[in-house]
Image (cartoon, rainbow, N blue to C red; front, side, top):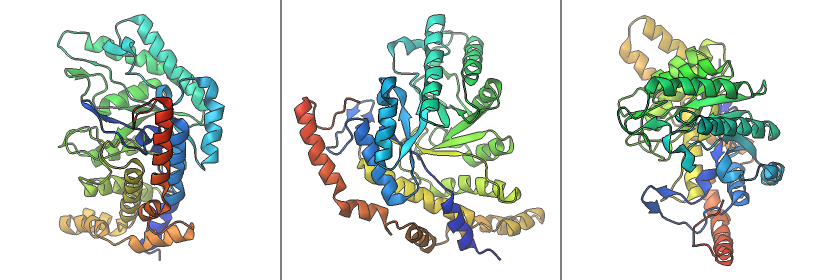
Length: 399
């Protein structure tokens, strides 16, 4: 008989998390930045920091990249891929920038100006081509498109523009690539956001084509929304493509995963394990990615904290006794069914995680190992000196 601990260990063996390049650089709020001396200045710095996280955690082999911030010159793609390899990681998801150019003031692919729509669609297709060159599976799309005032634009016309652009992008995918369509309820569009919820993203992904899936950002929901229900529905429709991990106090925060509601993250993971259990242990292909930009916590420490929290919660969720839970559900034994979840959530998985790390020659405590290593102090010293030589303010970056 397979023990819960064995299930948790096996879950960790197949759980890989992508860290974001932008999470290692200086970022802030809309009001300003709080600089950190050790923040990455350029792409080589970001890859070095990502390599440090992977060395200590053993489960972060890929780095999500942002095209405008990380690949201003596409001709350097091979050079960047080589730099990633030197640090023990590789390039992961490709994230086009469809919100920063001045032309996108009224939207990107939904813009009323046909020339700007063509510019945005071409950028997506160019990003797909970049993904092919870098052997990256996922092209992750987040749109700031929407309107601020009633009557500003036709809501239905904007929907039609999205349909056209995503169909066009889908045609450029290689057979092994996936187009991830993200959604967000509000910000920066105050009146209506074009892809405001999972249903809109689902519809657009279905219209785009069979290689398009929905990306669920755990911070992109109103407080009362049941995210695990969304996950369960998308799983059942074979439309769940990936996650952006963070936590939220309101509806779009970059807080470290599980810092506000770890039980919710556990419940989300449980839906994935439950789905696989019903299918004889076959898991769907899901991209697990972090989307966090910390302006207060140290960058690498926050990344390690999120990764280790995700591992613990994923392992706990694998320990649910599904056979008993399904029996209790059929018998209407509500408390007993719920306690199957509660028991696993409150289980101590420290021993399982320790055994897994030992089996992979990893430090018992990645965060402690990072602090002892002196990595942060060393790169802070070097990066401060480099910023001064470049004439940059302390903590700023140019890439």
